[in-house]
Length: 303
Ligand SMILES: [Zn+2]
Ligand SMILES: [Zn+2]
Image (cartoon, rainbow, N blue to C red; front, side):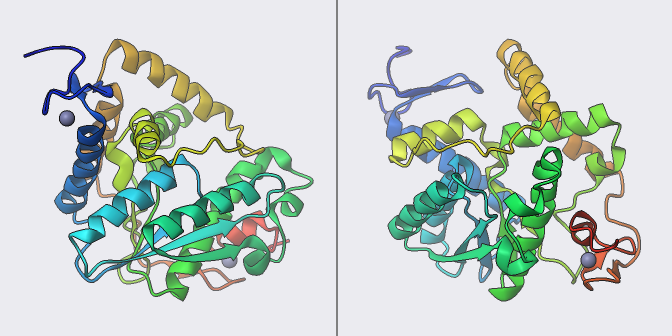
């Protein structure tokens, strides 16, 4: 019965062994298991409601590839939910061209409507030029601008939700990074909720799957494409957090999940919504808790 080389459900040759719980599954049952775990999270946390228009951030990388494939399966049993894939073209030479091609192949396969929005169109220039004299800040500047781009896209295409491909590893790393920075507000504040009636909620349906499971899933689906690393991807703290959590997970399976559960537990007990009604940025008019929004700050519009 307990043959280590066979699927624990159907007895076919096992393709993968899940770390937690210790289960072996054939390719078909692994894909089904991954999809069902995401569907369960969507339903348990009401991430998507019938009739929603869900904007899916599709960079073409591994996480968003898994996200569009799994959500395309989800809408088969939820035909009232509409997906719109949006690729943000930041303007990063010798990087974005390949991933946009990968994204196009995916939308062709899934039949999801696809839009591309560029930093040049929204912010007047490519990321490469915007950060030319401050390359060390490129990653965080890009993050701020991408976030605004998705908000703008959600407005343009009347989306009710913005879905991003953050996985369990990303989430666990963020918790540890916030702790290491002593950044309690970021740890506690659930920015996905935003301000009631003012903000499109952000959802992370893949937060129940580890990076390893995501890579396995897209490989089994036949959509794994080795892509170039983003030339700016050098957040040192995240790399260290990744290493440390990797060591702990290896020794104590379930660590990643427990880190995220721990944070979610804190969020349930501590008020996490931003206080009061948001104000508007005096330069661009977007919602912000301060006088000038982050986008205007990183674009130096306030100087
Ligand atoms: Zn099986
Ligand atoms: Zn602004």
